Length: 61
Image (cartoon, rainbow, N blue to C red):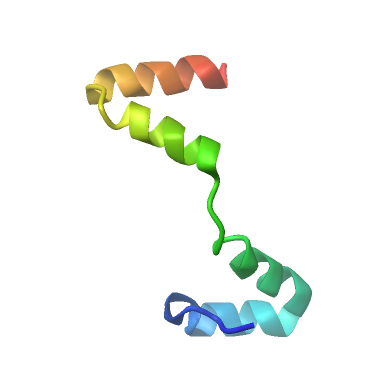
């Protein structure tokens, strides 16, 4: 797998040395989107910050 340059640092290399499968799986999952989450963030981005925070807090409760 080609690692994005953002992960070309000592932290990823150490993680990969400890557990290659987990490190590769982590990076792999940063490379695809989540259409439902993207749509939710788009809607939330149009709200005032206080309203957005209130909704997120309510949904997490």
